[in-house]
Amino acid sequence: MVTEERFEFTATAKKRLVITLVVGLVLSVLGYFTLGSGGDHGGGHGEEADNSEMVSDHGEEPYAAEDAADAEGHGEEAHHGSSSSVKRLLSNLWINNVFFAGLAIIGVFFFAIQYAAQAGWATGIKRIPFAFGSWLPIAFVLMLVVFMIGGHDIFHWTHSDLYAEVGGDEIVKGKAAYFFWPLQGGEFPLFWIGRLVIFFGVWYLLFRKLRALAFAEDIEGGTKHWYKMRSTSAIFLVFFAVSSSMAAWDWIMSIDVHWFSTMFGWYSFASWWVAGLALSLFIVVMLKDRGYLSVVNANHIHDLGKFVFAFTIFWTYVWFSQFLLIYYAHIPEETVYFLERWKDDHYAPVFYINLILNFFFPFLVLMTRDSKRHTRILKVVCPAVVFGHWLDFYLMVSPGTVGHNGGFGFLEIGLILVYASAFLYVTFNALSKAPLFAKNHPMLNESLHHHI
Amino acid sequence: MSQGTNYVLGVYDDEDVLMDAIKTVRESGVKIEEVYSPFPVHGIEDVLGYKRSWLSIAAFMFGITGTTLALTMMVGMMGVDWPMIIGGKDYIPIPSFIPVTFEMTVLLASFGMVGTFFVISNLKPWGKPRIYDIRITDDKHVMAIDLDGNDKSEADIKKVLQGSGATEVNNKTFD
Image (tube, rainbow over all chains, first blue to last red; front, side, top):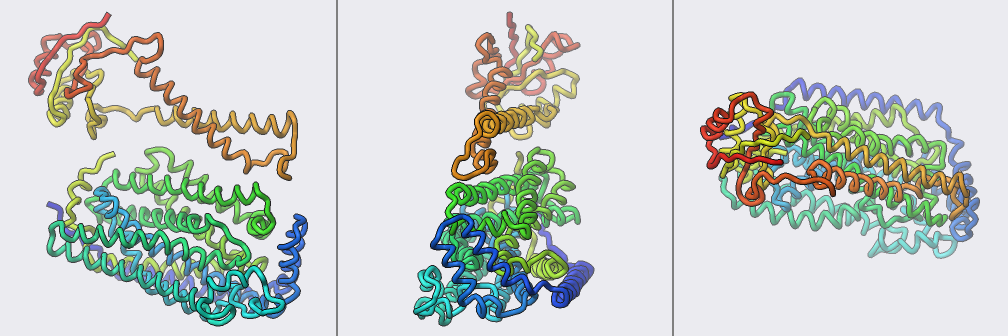
């Protein structure tokens, strides 16, 4: 018989996380103010001109004209509402909001998938990603607040003059209903906010329901709760399939409002999913090192490692599918996205680092069986992959929000530390509230005998 | 693979008995050449003391050969031998080469593995695959022990096998 295990969130661990958070705060404040004094404010206008030049270099009229109008017309007041350092702060807050909200929902997704697939092997580990879900309400509040305060600096489409009868932006006008329905373009973005509320609302509701069922199973046992969790998981997965894609359009793709990609939902999901898997694996390995999780052995860790390895390739596949079609078709209104990221001195290094950290490094290192079973290697690869996917989101957001005023300095590092320590605090706090694994799970025995 | 001619075969009904039998037989100092089973038995390679297989490294080598071959071919044709501009790209547009490179990697890796499989299971055209006992494809596990490769006498080995729970102990000779 397996004995119940409880994670103890020690005072030292709490202290360390709080210290990290404070260090992060200091760094970001430091970073923010050094930006303010030495900033390159002049970049703004020049960059607009640059952009339209680059597009017109490629010769096609409609978009180039559009973009030039952009720079001359409403560009003046709309683009430069706040100073570049404020924009950079808001942009970074948004990157972290999106990234950590994604990690939180991926934890629930992992849990749900194990039930829908009737998988037994993960019984001992699935409460660890599941605990990420406790971040959801905080992520929701943070997102709403940052959008209300800084929406105009992050999202170009929020500017009402784009929807003017005369002199507006025809492309954005065509997309107005997606943001503002049932109101008119340029008023309050009711549809967008409504989706944000519904997504987080349903995600959190189903997370709470799954959690209640899981804890009821701890007390009562039997298979009744397992069946209920399976049907709840199925409902969650159907909802998640649609909502994760739309969330990616809403929160990230709409930043580059003139541009669109049909791969984008998958692409963001893949990025979240790999980061979530790598973080789960990292926490499992760390807990194991500290003597927890007696039900987990090298085989479970190996399987999680395979997950990270396989979905690293999946992420690359989706990334490349989006990239190659745009590269090959060479249509200006599509290539502008990669011009800003790949053929741009400012972001080109990040573009390559993104590929190295998220594909070449984990692909080559995690290929052998031994590397997926040896925790020493996993302790290096997993954090690298999590950070790599943060960079991926950085690359999705920054060129569209701050352009050449962006960078990677104390502000970025500080905010990552703040969000990561807060996220881990919430996760560990949730983990300590319940047994680490479900001792009455009908498939626990299967998991104990898992062998690959 | 070393191939002896005189074998003693222990036949087992149940995989749990087989697992214990492997331990007993190995502890008594008898060398097992191979164990055949109709379905995969989890953990059997640890009990038999097998080292990690080289198959995955072979697969990687076949794959990387495909990668190199594809890139060399395309760069040679499109970039060196007869440079052409296609779709406004460079002479050597690496992103456009990636799908073909990927396909060649997969193709050579899988062809290589099929070939390797034929060779190691003696299914090559001039090979003569050995069948120790036809029932290994049905419901029996068979432990093959090479008499020439063991110091112990045939009678001793048979005694060990019988004591380990084998339902039958047979002799098998190949030419």
